[in-house]
Image 1 (cartoon, one colour):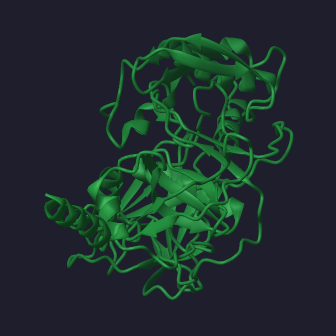
Image 2 (cartoon, rainbow, N blue to C red):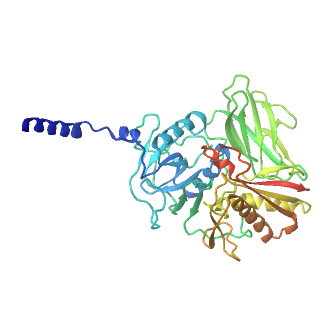
Image 3 (cartoon, rainbow, N blue to C red):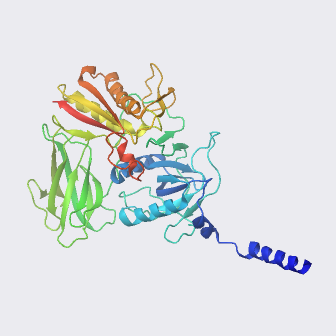
Length: 440
């Protein structure tokens, strides 16, 4: 009997000592419940670059990208999903590699951003290649980037700007927060920041033709700041996003016919689209200038009665009726539109993801901190109340800057008009404010 027990004990020890799975295998076998997994689409050393890339990823992927500081690598990680389910993170990273321009998406397992005590997380995490399931020794930086989907060839390095960034995960209501540490409110009298753009320079090494997308306001020929998307018509795939009113180089489409669509959707203006042949660009007003750039004019017309525009670049803090700092540009654009035409009357439609009630954070009485959590109060309410409060803060911003309250109406929908399933990876599309033109 003693001999039997001895061999049984030896067998158990052998299993414990020699049947241990590899780190990658253990990560794949069971969910990582205590530390989240992030689906990362980009890393930046400069805070401003991360901010702009985040806004661009939101408008292109139609999900709410967020970013946080990875203190171990000293880089801002831009991610589109945070989950305890490791397998789900791997699948989503693979999907983005295959179906989007973010072909180098990876999974990061470890702490990011600030912890509950306010300190920046300073523990080592693991960057994982979703295809090999192996850890990555290095990650690629995207700053400076020449296009949203391009890959930077520079390795991870120390940032030139080290301002901490606090970021919060997607909440059940579908909202997310990215709060800059020491963020102070910026009044509309200060210069509005440049829009979240990704420039494509004419000398960036891309094989292709030089274009100049001339974005002008039709009524007075004034230049309008904005961008143009180039779409491969046959493959129904975006080729890139290019800055307007500047020479850019557009890469050759992968299709045989050369057919592409050039689309401008500047907020506050109607969509303009030119369908051309890349190999022989022709159309009204299209011609080569003295530098050999192919000039494509976009005569932009302001929104008209009955038009509805989605404020894709207005984001809100988690569970809050307070705008994130990167929303300043688009709400200022709306202000400019209303100042330009005093006859405009609008209705702001607020929407949430789902209809669950919950915490609502709003500005304290008499506060003017439209873009900061520094002066707030906390309450509880329905999803409809949250959507109403979010539309109201945009209205209050406009009124505080001289717009007559009689020109603005509010409609709260809560989660009644979703664009996507509330549990899908694209659920953030449901969280939005729309601008309807009632009179012009």
